[in-house]
Amino acid sequence: MPHTARLSWDIFCTVIDNYGDIGVAWRLARRLAHDFGQPVRLWVDDLASFSRIAPLLDPASPLQQVDDIEIRRWSQDDGFAGYQPAQVVIEAFGCRLPEAVEQAMAASATVPVWINLEYLSAEDWVEGCHGMASPHPRLPLTKYFFFPGFSDRTGGLLCEDGLIATRQRWQQDKLAQRAFWQMFDIPEKQPEEWRVSLFAYENPAARELLEYWTSSPMPVHCMVPEGKVLADVEAVLGQPLQAGQHATRGALTVHVLPMTDQDSYDLTLWSCDINFVRGEDSFVRAQWAGRPFIWHIYPQEDAAHMVKLDAFLSHYCRGIDAETASALQAASHAWNHGQGMVAAWQQLENCLPQWHQHSRNWPDKLLKQGDLGMRLVQFIQNRLK
Image (cartoon, rainbow, N blue to C red; front, side):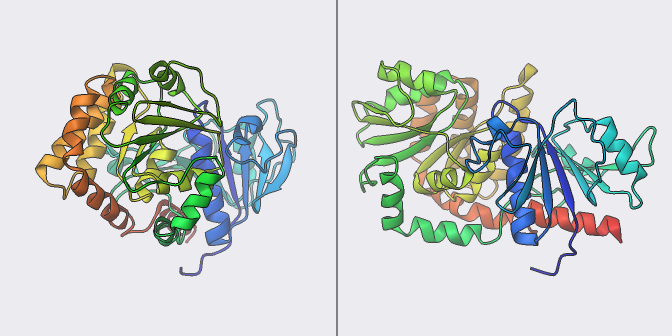
């Protein structure tokens, strides 16, 4: 990696109930600190929730160092007296910076580069808005909009150095995979078995598919992290479940996984044949896993999320044969509409070899122009010239 000037960074993030926002902010902080040697302060409003994906974090401590990153509790009634802005200030996903922070930025001898890190989208309009400058209405500050995306005219996707090579080694290491599953009291994967991870919002389509899998000719082991879809799983199995428990009905065995740190979740994705993911962070990580995946996008009013889903599928399906692309689009729509999943899945099953091959090739296409971390650092350096 080329030499990167050492800059100080402040990242502000509010925790949304689905952990996606803090998940991305935490990965970005780690990317900047570990791969670029940048000193990072991460300001978070809900340390208790944050600690569920960062177990080394002490929710009671307002100031701490975790994984070489300074973590600060961001209290909404904090006056930020004495706050000294970093050289780069990021507000993650439009979280509003406190007035005192903006005032301190404006009064700084060297005005920080102010970034609004936006949500990921594959829609065409993102390319026109990426990097756009927005002058503050009252203060001598300019905010720049930084959009993650799927083309070289966007901010790209976040991927740490060496991740793909590490993942490839893991997927060839059967002993490491066996030891990983043993930590959850789950047997090692058998050759004639589907191993699936299921991380989703509440979804009637999940009930349809799980019911179908109970009669599968091949055993299906479904890994379900604690979360919103668990009620649908319990309805199919006819019993309540909690982390650490498993249940079997017919060919389907469900294992409920505890909430874990990000690295362990990556290993889950790498170790499964197919991954069902939700939101933004797990969606991106599923792409680096090099395995087939189905995305449950966060539902929005007026079905606006379906436009975003189709925009992604338009990118993702380039280079796939027409039959596989059609099957993947049908399954993605059924999953996000909450119905028709069995018929769509049966169609997609016929295309699994092509889908697997495309999934293996996809990360290389995404990283040709560098990841989000590299593009963000370059963007900042260009602003400071």
